Length: 289
Image 1: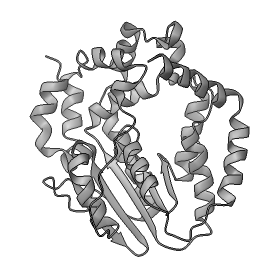
Image 2: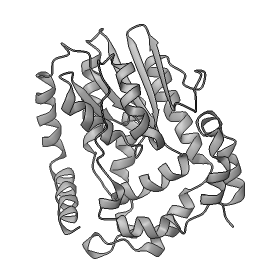
Image 3: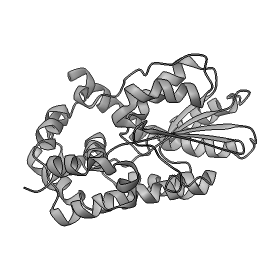
Image 4: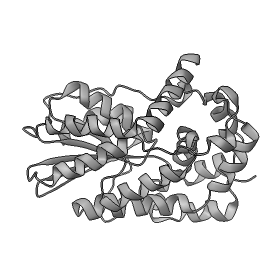
């Protein structure tokens, strides 16, 4: 855990004081990236198992592989401003990569592979809150990166409302529909196999559910990339191994959502499309009882 905290402190230092240098280095790096093989872009909301997908594909393929959370011009710029105006005061690397990748794609007209993963929205929102503690570090962090659990729980409770699915639906509108003309809410989704493949012109699109990644990834990626055999997922970025893991465990089992917001989440377009069989489980897990 001490090693993890040192890495976080170092990452924050680099991000805060060397952000322009990091972008310069990556801008040079992008000049040498070749799209001789079709790019594979893992484009997802945060905390949905996308790091594992990225690490697996990066280690197995010669195609250029990218891992980002935004690609649209508006989405990238809005996210940059959110980070700069937060306690973090710096841009994360994935937004630097997204900006450079968007520029490079303007001159590319070949095939693209796009992969998105999703997660039960309340669990995703809780996990994302802790992944981004530097957003609120002045409010919830104590010395040594320790989390003030009372303050963190209070702040998280304020953020867990019906807007979490609104934001996910907006994300799909901005990042998938507008960029690639694919409307996932209009596509048939089989909740028994837990993935969707859509091919449209030069775009191949794969959507996966995080809850079933270990089971479905080998089959789905074989079909998606037309592989001769299945490919096992390599799990990375595990929340239980993070510096905030103790606070995350304690607060996750004690947090709840008021009935009104929970009902709106369950009735949302996102939840009804991808998690219609999880209603009772979500009510039991997150309901205000």
